[in-house]
Length: 100
Image (cartoon, rainbow, N blue to C red; front, side, top):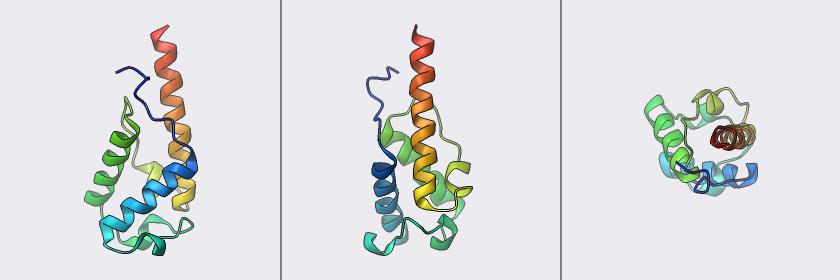
C-alpha cells in the first residue's frame, strides 16, 4: 500500500471521529461523549473495541494494525487520539523509509 492513501489526521480529528463512533456503538448522542472520559466508562466490550480500532484503521487507511492498548491504556479519549495520531505518523514515516 502506498502512503499516498494514508489519512494524516490530527489528534483533534481522531478524537472527533472516536467520539462519534463511540456514540454510535453505545447508542447515545455524540455530545454526551466527553473526550476526557476513558473507554471503560462507556461499557465498551472487547468485540466493540476491536470493531472500533478496525474502523479507525480503515478510516485512516493504515498499512498496519493499531494495538488495542492505544485505546485502553490511555486515560481518556483525547489521550488515545494523541497516541493514535503519533502511531499513525510513525507508520507513515516507517513506510516512507522502507520505500527508499
